[in-house]
Length: 281
Image 1 (cartoon, rainbow, N blue to C red):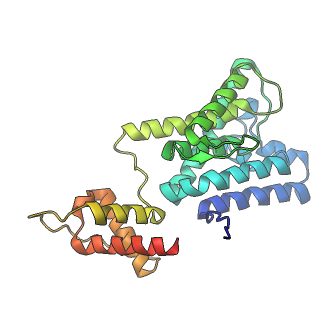
Image 2: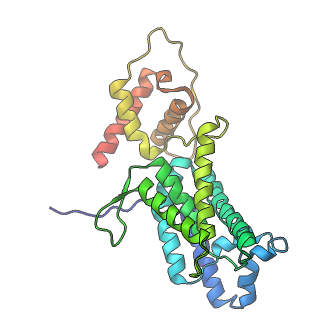
Image 3: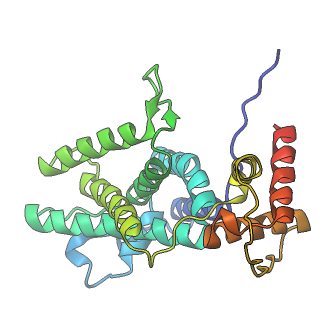
């Protein structure tokens, strides 16, 4: 019996962010080799008023190939499902927000400890994405080398956050920007806590990858409503094939109006999508 490892398909903004980080490192290693360029792009808490753009640019500068590889691997692993769930533009804004939160934490800690070492790297933003993964799939099991048993996502992120907070509080001088890590983690956690309490912020909508589960539940458990007024038809989005666009339209309708708003025909479409998904698996 043969088995194969199936890797998730990279989502658009995860791919663009990885490409942007790789291009910046390549340019800094081959063309823009002056140390002045890195200083202009790195986040320096003591010079943030003089170089405010560094609250964003520092995320694309890394201290070496291993630093870049570790961050981009984590971005791929955690960012792919999170972008699929949140959508492209919200995911990008969330990612950048976590990076800015990491810079803000570095600035605060530098003020308290009089430590103004420049900060580079996407670790804060990537850790914010890891928080999003743990908030959306808290019981997902993750294997972390060299631990032989899987760890639940919420436990892994909590333990890592506790360790980073302790190291930042004691001012560990190990060359790692622990305050930035804490800032990215904290921003991600606060975002989801505030979002859950605020009806004005958009909730992650069901994506195509979740269509099978939604369709199966709707087709098996939901029964057509009696004496229900027919719901207005919501237009299908363009840019996909007709079947995919129709499934997306129905999922949007569920998100906006609830399962009870579906017509018999729409339930059948979701049921067929579920069957196709099972056949592919």
